[in-house]
Amino acid sequence: MKIKEFIKKNNLENSFLIGYYGGGNLGDELLLEIMQNLFFEAGYKKIKILYFNLKRFTIYHKDFGFIAIHLKEKYKVLKSFFNSKNIVVGGGGLWGLDFGLKVFIFSFIIFFCRFFLFKKVYFFGVGYYKSTTFLGHIGAFLASVGASHIYARDEESYKNFRRFNKKVSIERDMAFYLSEINLNKYTEDVARIEQDIRIEQPVMVVCFRRFTGKHANDYTKLITEVIEKYQNQRFILSIFEPKDIDPEGYSYISNLKTKLSNVQTITDFQYNPVSVYLFFKKYSTNITLIAPQFHAEIIAYLSGIPFLPLSYDNKNTELLHSLNIEPVYIKTLKLVDIETFLITNNKLIML
Image (cartoon, rainbow, N blue to C red; front, side, top):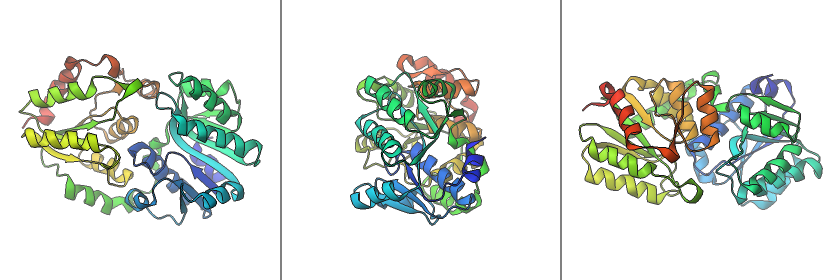
């Protein structure tokens, strides 16, 4: 049974949706928007959402009549955990290279809800990878044994979850439901992107990402070298987060735009995530993409946009293998890898 069918056939009224929602990350906001669509289409009304920053909610999401609760509203959060019938974890590679203390606490909360509050806990399209830390494996164990049913988003996650819980199904990431939701309501959102980003001629969109500590690599350095070297190519530079979340990243691409005439536009992420997919799809014949972000790669694939298949974690590798695409590993990324991609798609991006 697919996730969409599971949501329709099981009584998930009075559910509390939790995930890394409200941080302004393209992938997490996309997953939440799809989740809202699926719950709305199934006819549910009493749905609550744990959200980190309510000021961002109307930027990234449509109003489906559900209730968003700020993480700092502790009384409302606790009340929602106690009063909700179901706890639903909606997507994300939570137990992987990006694992941190917040996810560990999150894992313990899931365990607590299952065995102390006696809630039904469902995971939809989640990931668990051997690239996670020692604490990550402990967190994944706590979360797994606390789950009533798990939908793993790839083969590795399925095998890892199955060690702790046999009620596991495998399905692709929920972003693949983009083609199955009602997209008509996002027309105005696409127009809003078009006001900021004009695609009148072929262009390469390049997305930067914060890589520090265990993520450290030469991606930013190599991408910058390419942009500086190929002055006859047109680029749009982006960070798929709000600039207040990644001010250094936004300052970096701002400086590149000031210095280089081939940088056409820069942008941060201030749009409904479904509209980003529709925008890419609308201009797919004029766009190529370089982006290490997991969900940016899915959007490119679904939009029919040529993209450099970068992998910085097992989640990317699993995704690309499922699409029969050979990954380019970011830890061993070389200038020639980017140049080969650029030259291969040269007919799309020449000035």
